[in-house]
Image (cartoon, rainbow, N blue to C red):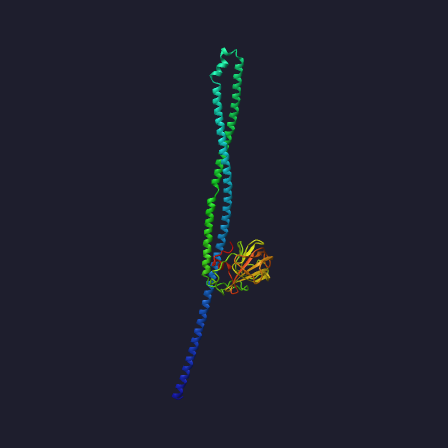
Length: 381
């Protein structure tokens, strides 16, 4: 091979090696980019999972605090009722005691006056009449004096008996008054009120923690009912419609939260619970969470009787399991925050009367608890 041919072959070989090197570099770069993307996705999923776990824990703490507050309020109401009853009894006993004391004082004064009168009327002159031998012939005078003494002595015995009875009643009522005051002092109203204040502080702290988590949400949770585990959110709550007035859709505690179901309460429901269940009683009022327009009102599969309200800016709220005949609005009707739109029922896939409440952002269901907490409403009180 000539030198020129050898040079050409070397150039071709060098060119091929360069192309191979570039290809290898591109594959390495692509692999690195793919690995970086996978790592980023994994990190995002882990962050979302940690946030979801923190939100669930915060919601659990809030629920526990709300339960404790309800018990504290009940205990305070009971203590207050006991206290008011004790006050009424103590006031009555005190009034009776004062009256008995007044009566006893009057009886004692009457006895003292009677004794003084007896002494005055049966002094030495009366004794002289009875025992003076010079007056022995005046039988009528002696008999009259004896009669006067007899009547005065009878009155004295009667008054003495009345004084004894009045004094005994006074002493008994004094004992009852002391007992009533002791009962009044033992009613734990102050302790119950302090317990309410402490429980309210716990609720406030838990609500603040939950609201802080809502504000720091990395992404809302995807809600495919086909997935048994929560996925990374497809939408984020950016605070849309925060300026409008919001209210609780129903009164009652939370009986089932947003998220994956470990077990199905009834047949036919999905693995992922798209809403928050509120344990309101049958026929209890259902309120529009904020101003909007009714987009749907009627039967919808496992939801039973259902209302969907659009609030604009991509926000919707849904209300399910409404009682038969208790949908109070129609499609296209405007509603105001706090307006009664339905009555709680158990239609559709339901185990008992409750409200299934949903919040949707751009058509995707999100957890209503942090959503409303960010807007100043504690769901489930």
